[in-house]
Image (tube, rainbow, N blue to C red):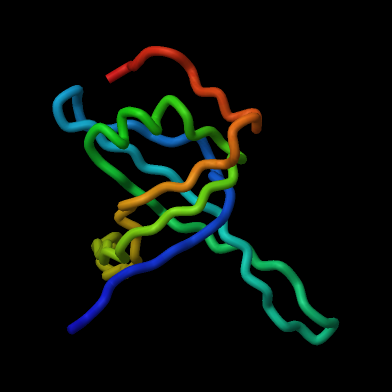
Length: 117
């Protein structure tokens, strides 16, 4: 049995992008996760940017909450995202988000009211 499950914690790198329509809403965002790399002078932080997406009512709700800079923990599955550009094949992965852990209440994460779907 193969298991495809990942958990990442980081900060939202840019305001999320809505897509789809009112009946099939989607949301995508980039999550900046810091890794540590050993160098000749010691260790340095190295950011890794993960493309994340989610769908349905959860996407509709989180579109009004998630903002650039917000700390998040996401759980989901890695999904291949292969494409061709200028005759070259490119391979990458994105996170199909199943669960999102928001920062504690009281943090400055109040989203806008209403919906623009």
